[in-house]
Image 1 (cartoon, rainbow over the protein chains, first blue to last red):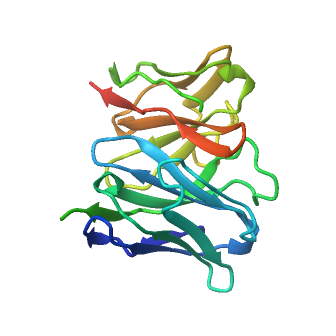
Image 2 (cartoon, chains in turn blue, brown):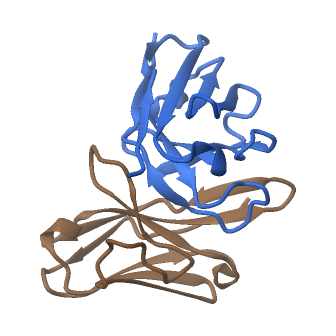
Length: 123
Length: 109
């Protein structure tokens, strides 16, 4: 059974940093992984993706240069390092499994999602 | 960038058919995926590659995609189908992006 469990959310002041984690229970090293967020009252927004081996990384323009996605396949864990946080980064952050490995992206979808962790950026 | 347009809300009586549209420029040339999202829960994939259903998703859910519009159809709507529904595509120009529509709130009357 595929499980994804996010952690690390909380309340943080603008400009500060936070690191999210996502623990996975499947053959983690075979799949690309994503972070997707949902701001209060808003829709889903894709944030970042990392390929199965960490060699390919892509970011939404809204977080590029501030957020870093990474993974540790030995620990079956996905990370999102968030620096220079802004109030508009307030959202529930979900990790999601890609339907493919990410060796060559194209037409991919998210086949499993975690329950999410809430990040609130406020002074 | 690539934009997807969904109606904010759709209402339907139990037992009737709900159709949720997703508009995009030549979206018929892309693979469209659909997610169901209930409050406080993880989103769930209900349709992938325009019209395929994951295991465990009822046959009442179907999808189509042509021209500038993709459609999610839910037959014999049940109270438990009430949720937000999102379409999604992968888009690539100089970079890779995964794009969601704005979401449609399905209300079962």
